[in-house]
Length: 90
Image 1 (cartoon, helix red, strand yellow):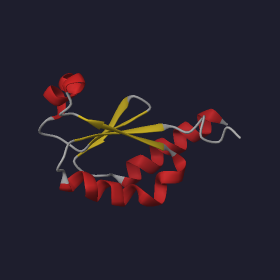
Image 2 (cartoon, helix red, strand yellow):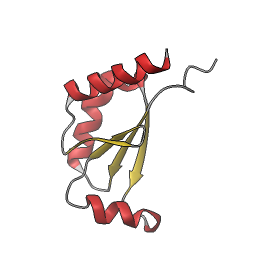
Image 3 (cartoon, one colour):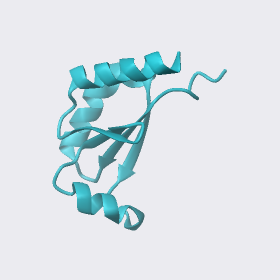
């Protein structure tokens, strides 16, 4: 079964602690079967480029490597983009 293989990847740029990130993950809960959530801790040394870019903006989300949204989950935008990706993979 390769159901997970063609799911889009939603990347969450985060750090600890991040109350907004925790809130965002709760908002994402109903959608989570539609994507693979990948978390990137921007405070890790190997992620310093992301830290420089996003230190004042987390949570930041990328969908399949492209910037999607920041600060809060825009469910309308997420829904729209997920639908686009799902249509492309059919």
